[in-house]
Image 1 (tube, rainbow, N blue to C red):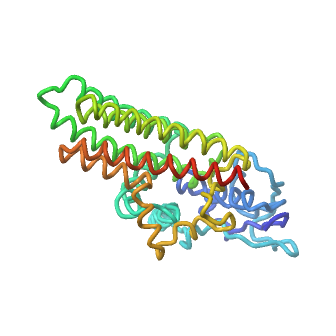
Image 2: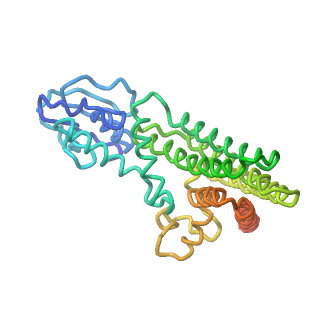
Length: 331
């Protein structure tokens, strides 16, 4: 589509182009798709006003029902996610079809089996509000830091209600994981992508994880577990600072990062190919999985096991990071 002309059309008199689905009108969604696809020009032949949003491509008006310019790609402004929008019922079907297309193909097992069924419903509501993906990222960060603070309170104060507080802390970890999915879903459904948002999301996740590792060590009780939590958090911080350095050198896109044993030409679908036994082992280090398991272990009154899991994962990634830096330095 790069540099091409896109002809956006619908039947004369159709209200579908101005119907809001997922926070955008169908017409605005088509223009965003063309803009993101690299089209140089869009000719719009539908009833109703043009969106006020600014685009990189040139947008021109044409009479509804007019013919497409020679060589232009024809795009319907009355279809979303394969559903033709004619009334409120079909618009609802189209919205759910669009929402179901949002999760990444390489999402983790907990995201696929549990989280997305909740996060998509939250995202559907958020898409109708003025909230931005970055605001949702900050909300997820506050939930995670709240869970870490609660864990620390349990360890330091050892209140009589500690069993219930551990359940609440575990539930907050899973809630944080679910809300953390919503910022990306909201960015995709409303085309609100940004490099700042990507960095904010990653930094917020890393701050949350480091705080939770420390909180788990404190909640486990005793000087030994405190130092386990400190070591786990410190290892996490080191690993992520090294990752930031590598990503910055590679152009600033986190999705382009590959470990030394991964091919740089592999797509993320190849990296997380479910046919590979390594992928299932690596799932234990995927954020949706370990937050879910930490939460379950806390609810089961086993913060020591959760802290040990966090420390083992941190030690593994610290070791991998040291090897990665050594291999890349020699290369």
